[in-house]
Length: 226
Ligand code: 6PG
Image 1 (spheres, rainbow, N blue to C red):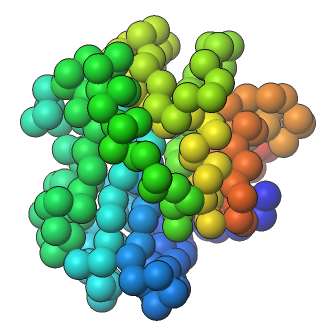
Image 2 (image 1 turned 180 degrees about the vertical axis):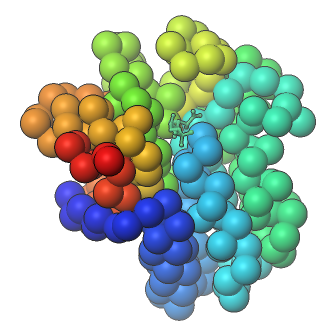
């Protein structure tokens, strides 16, 4: 895992934007399309807003989601809502290539439907992930047993509300050429420290078949927040 430490969240967002643009150009040149899994939460919003101003071959992009909250499709707390507001509404990715998790159907039904959609898709070209203050990533939370062998998991008891979610599994999230964690802010420093000390947190379970990088600001490093 490569750690790239930057001064602040804006630097993290612009570095992530650069990594994504570069990955998209390489994938489209090599295979004619770019498959990316988006991270949810708030951190990636800056990156998606910068991405929306980049010059990319959007018509060759295929977008997936690492997880989704089981809320109505137009709920502002949905990861798809944030991605649409910051990115999809501003660029020309064909709607048929934006694969939103149908989480409004509930965890079990949505997980089944999304797993079917993902048949034959990985490896992804890029997977973006965030990290919660407890070391969770996507909707994989510490101390929760996750059914192995499944690509998409129904989550019924997430400690970060809403409790009902849908999450890609660690196995399928690792099926990617490039894995990029985006982590900012002092409230993540404790989880980063636990991760760096070897605790088997969900973030530590992510190993890509390609390369993996953490793009992080100084505030999120243990002992660095002023
Ligand atoms: C979610 C996210 C989650 C997120 C982390 C960090 O649906 O909640 O997928 O895994 O990435 O909780 O969230 P912030 O970026 O808002 O700190």
